[in-house]
Amino acid sequence: MKVIVFGATGGTGRATVRELLEGGHEVTAFSRHADQLGLSSARLHLVSGDALRPEDVERAVSGQNAVVVALGVNDNPLKVRLLHRSRTPTHVCSGGTRNIIQAMHHQGVRKLVVVSAYGVGETRDKLPWFFKLFYRLLLKEQIVDKERQEQLVRNSDLDWIIVQPVGLTNELPRDDVLASPTGQVRHRTVSRRDVGRFLASLVPGNDFLHRSVALSG
Image (cartoon, rainbow, N blue to C red):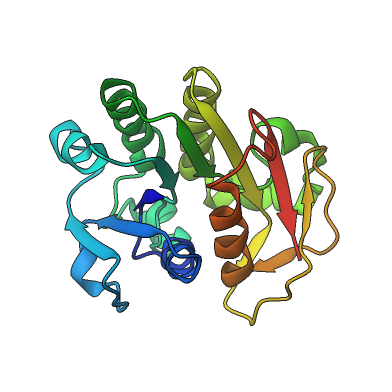
């Protein structure tokens, strides 16, 4: 399949690109700095663009069979919250996803896999109080953006799946993650490699279609 990954140079995006390539897919890696991906393959295409620019997104989505959205803000949350400084606009998830959905409708692409976060949407009430406090104090803008993103996806009329990983780490993959459509978790962390592997596994089939899935190690 031809699959495009938005936010490809972030930790989760890069892991997803790697897993898709290992699965034999033809992958387009979309990022503002796609040349910094650090991966190479004859089946890999690098596209530098801004997800907040509809024309960039429209060109990139053309000819794809599926879309993975791994957009996010990677800056230090203290800097973003207290100093209001971020290299990435804090509305990138909702704004970028709105453009992606529009382009998918224009281009006739149906499959959409989106990375959100545990504690958003259907798992909001399952988040422990100390994580709720952390979200409110340091990640308020990003979480509001994720909420808007999820609503856009649910209203998109596409073949969508929302994946909500718990706390992300750079540890080695466990290969036995818990994927729960009811929001259950086993541990409070999960490796980016495991998330990437799970996202790649969702692209070809119909597992969890029109569901949000909590993902934990």
